[in-house]
Length: 224
Ligand code: MD3
Ligand code: FE
Image (cartoon, rainbow, N blue to C red; front, side, top):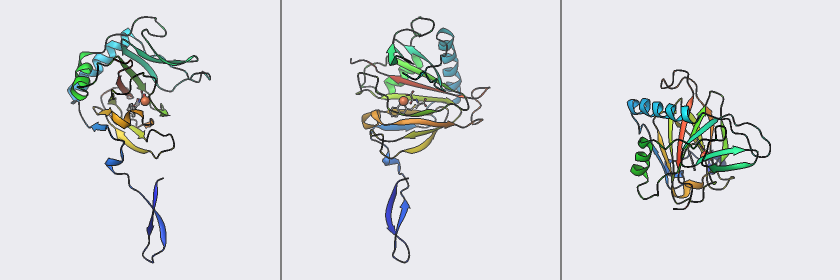
């Protein structure tokens, strides 16, 4: 907990919690609540289900230890992010089927050109699927060779408690909720901020009949 020195009524020094203000976010962090309407979310989910028919969800494991992630993943785009006992990397094919990833749907390339008009086109869209107990530990996204482009995230389904800090693992973090239809742009300093998903809140969305959460992250991987 971040605290600051203050004085109580008797003049004694006490520690008070510093309430994080919106401008405590790293620069370049932009949240667009309800960017997508419910109809657009239904359409986007249908499109993602088509991607997952071509490129089924797989369960990545941690490098070295082989410990499985609680989040299942897939990708679309010319490159997809994978993790196995050999490490984290981007590759052009699905780790189980060997097939190329399906293309990034137009609704998402359009989102990228709306929110990151200066950036070169995205190469990867990581699809994360969270069941009720899935989490994602605090990490940086740094497997890309180009950090000048932002990462753009779309949340669908149940609300997540998201945590974001600074580019130093020890810098203070704050948490916020990401709901279905929300879009986050992680550009500038926020591009290398530590972040993670503390938990998913069950039964907070009617988008998916069986609950759960989908997060899409659009990334530029290579130098243009
Ligand atoms: C802040 N996904 O796939 S998206 C990931 O909700 C990942 O599935 C989370 O972290 C999820 O790597 C969070 C929001 C997000 C994405 C990238 C970021 C926040 C970020 C990069 C830098 C800082
Ligand atoms: Fe991440």
